[in-house]
Length: 398
Image 1 (spheres, rainbow, N blue to C red):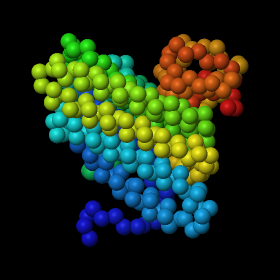
Image 2 (spheres, rainbow, N blue to C red):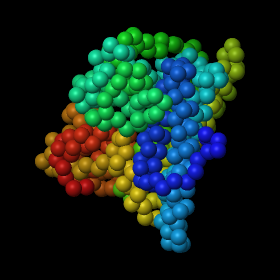
Image 3 (cartoon, rainbow, N blue to C red):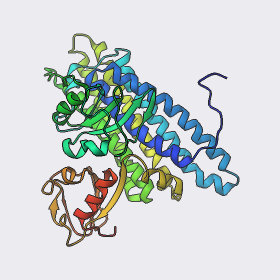
Image 4 (tube, rainbow, N blue to C red):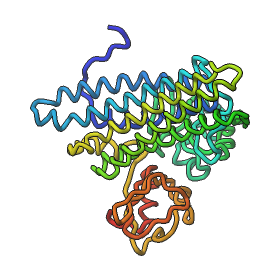
């Protein structure tokens, strides 16, 4: 049998879905980081994870087919197949983004510094033998709490740990993927690897249309990532309101892509070699696929199909949890802004949406967003962070 062959074996569908969700989200982070840092090593990690995702989706599909024994089973499992297919599409899109780097398709240098320093990025590093982190658990070194940098995945002897927890022990020669802001990453990267962290050099562009095209790609990336988060949230909470926001985001990404195409065509006449713009076109196409996949994740909710318990359980048990927190009248967050109480810093949770008491939604709220009693926050982060957010909100029942 070919080593790449996959045979049916009894597996937990929930466990496979958990790994697929974590891997899909990790792939998005890694793929864009490979482009922003021009890193062949990170891009190669993306393609390895993409191969792992291919195996996972086959295992999930075979297990779901074995479980369907009646029309009722088929109806219940159809949305689960949709989630599996969507995760696979995200994986494929991430692979296409990584190939922009590996195949030297090229992107304008301005793209390398298009992401603001305050936005988190992902870097890859190998733990040095003399690193202070070698031989310690993530809980003991308290890395995320002390530095704001999180280990989101570890590759050890060819195997991946995509959801390391506080009990995971770091070892010399482990390849770790670190997520954080450029400022926070620099000292941690040096402590982990023994090498200095070199961020992309700022590059100014003199072509306005090219700048607009690059800005559009960054906005499409942010919207697509948010759409994926909200899509999983809509499934977890069986919320048509959240799913409707995914529809709006997907439509906005489509509109942005149309404007992006116009700006690229205008810029092509002003750059020395228009072929260097091919990478941007590839990025835009792959990013649109990610937003389309987000819509597929929430399609079952939009069509009134009940969320299968296995999907909700998988979202709850994944690496980064998505939670709801109701704001109580006596909670510290009541009538305060997210920035005033430094919610992300204090809890480690990123608020991705706010449902107002009157049913309206604020998607991708910023530090200036004020929350009120009876608002419901939808946030993403660690389980420990979820408890801290609930305390801050007053732990009202949403």
